[in-house]
Image (cartoon, rainbow, N blue to C red; front, side, top):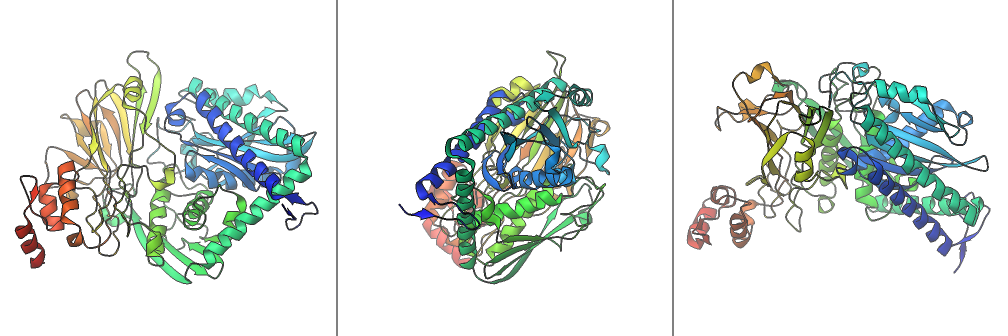
Length: 599
């Protein structure tokens, strides 16, 4: 096997050693992930997998990662680099561990706490390990989630790169600050310790690798891996058509006024080997917590870019070399202090907008829109059995879009969530005083098309004890999009079945009654809300469907019949959306031909 010499390196190394080093680092990141899951205290981490783990070399280049939540990985890149740049490498000693949650540096809101560790071998800095995870509470003005902040300082205590461990020893004063600024201190400190355990696991593996092969060999191998990542991504971009394409979507905002929707615009430009995402046409920063820090904006661009260029390869810094992001300061996607940033759902919506722009360039590489949201319900309060405070949340699966080859998958987490999953029903009912009345696919929610969009879900929460509840959702007023004649799926919505006097207890931040005024006047149709719920009241979370692909009247009638038999499509939907008449479970071929011919 021939030896290779990466650019800028004086060493030679064989390809087998490069692969051993690459896979060792990937395995180390996976071991960090398992350590975090096995030691975390709260379900948001060990069940939902709301975290992101990364490893970096001494130059802060990404060399391995392990999702959880994909939107945390690129955010880690920015957060580690920005914080180290602020502090300086000479600020660190062996055994130091730092935490940062200042949104404009850490990339996400204050509860997504980035903990990272400079890794030393014989007093030489060889890299960094990083873990970001969602903490339950850290001094924000509201319990559970902040939906209406107007200033970042309402969103929790801020750490700008603070040493929680110094030279291997915990700083008890910092730990006390965390404890006394949390409503759930035991779980928060437990999750911090879990993150630290993960960091130390990765650091140990990094040191073992350097000791086994020598730092020069390891660094040369990493150079080769990153160089290969850049070459592969650059080639993939060069194979795409040149041009510029744009798309526009809207977030609900936090208002009942449809005129106040928040504009999200993306323009994608491909020019030779350069790929640019421009978010400049989006709204200016807003005075509600829907602003997206620049590190997160870079991340959403990275996610789309990687899925188009190197989707089957483990991540490294080189794969993002052809990508650039344009967004001016003061924009929704590059807010300036003290803009609130807690409710980052506009970032998730932006991913679908970028894909919509790309669909105009490479429709064969992109599916129709997904349900476009995370559809999160969060419950909080005092456990009636233990008297302890609790916070539990469920992100919900949505329908994914169809493409030119197949129907869209149903009830999958939004693409920004990668490995994220639900909390099992039995676990959730044990953690919070509710019962689930229903969990099912949402009939007729998939966008009609020759290939049908995937279905969303319906999950009904029935309260058995007075409990706080809220929704985090930002795409309920506008539809997604189909492709090539396909139609959008059903919109996201939360339906509330409430007792009399609810309006003194529940604040509707996004009111959707006008969209469903003919359905049931006894129910409340909402997007974002927050309040206290009484026994017997129901929150019905109904997630959106994916867009369809192709003319619905060209869908195989037998496929429509099977959808009706499976409960995916109603008989009325089959007739109205697909022009297929179903009678006693069978296709009425004559009536179907007549109906389709009428259009």
